[in-house]
Length: 98
Image 1 (cartoon, one colour):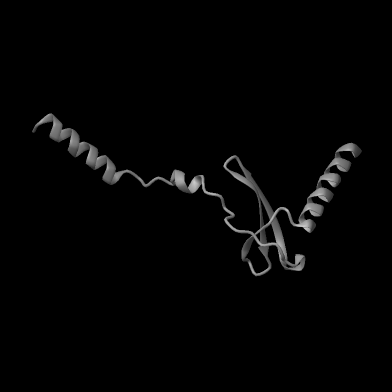
Image 2 (tube, helix red, strand yellow):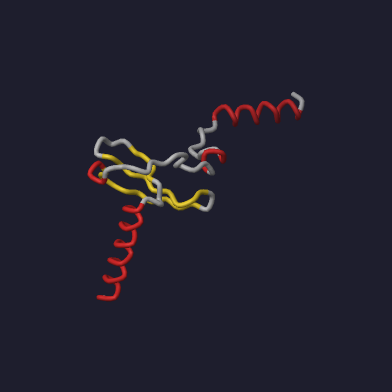
């Protein structure tokens, strides 16, 4: 058997039987989670807040609602800015107490 043909058959065998990769394509890794945001969201609907900051995307806030739906909240909303300000002050006070 020719060496080139053997190399091609070996390469195809490796590709066919290699386990699939769990990595995401680069286009999905660089994509921002929040493409649109909401400005008005009653705080009583929110179960949990998650904050994401990546080099490729601006600061993003994801709110998990009590219905288990996730929505992106505009980080410029006044109540959210106040929430973050209070959380930072609370963290500073706890560090100074220690």
